[in-house]
Image 1 (tube, one colour):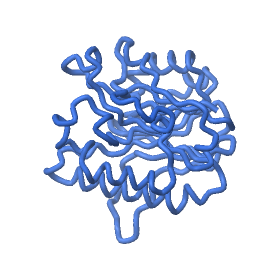
Image 2: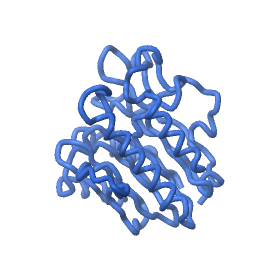
Image 3: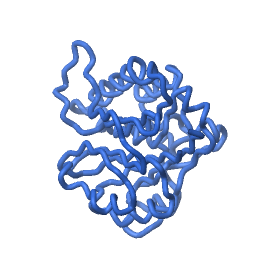
Image 4: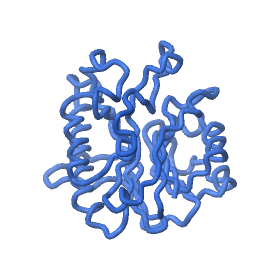
Length: 263
């Protein structure tokens, strides 16, 4: 089973790039983020024509996540549960999970968190990550099935995952608190698929900003990740970053990251 994560940065604007990539890569499952559309505006007909079913958790203008699959999608859950004593009144569409051919998959669009020192954006990011850690620990990992938690985590796990660590040291994506919560996920027993198979490859990226020629100079960030439960990690055969969509006309600023499981 080929499973990919792809932050499309507005599905309507990138639909030609997305359908082109689907036809070329032919993934079995795709975890989409940053749809920027409500459920009713999701391009089901175009994706159905390529053989993909879809489950969507959309939001107007911002956020939005979806799961595409060539196979039946079952037991869909939208949104993360709140922690005891916590009530963000959270209406942001950032999480969807489902079961496909015996594999539990989740599409995650984790909050960016900037600016760190103003307002509630960074505390909200940390609370959201705490909820994700708790859900992975209490619900995902106890399931008797392999699981893949994929998406735009908006976290650079280490300085090897960013082109200019010093220049980005104050950014929410590189804060110790963000990285600590990412490590908490790994400490639960999840495996970061790309790092598992490419342990020594520094400065491989999945995101390049549109400004200042970042793509042309390969000045990027690795913030899109696939985290695997122990059973899924045992099935891991391949994992890589597909840079080709980022070099196309009018691309997303992210590019797909994929893994293959021997399901």
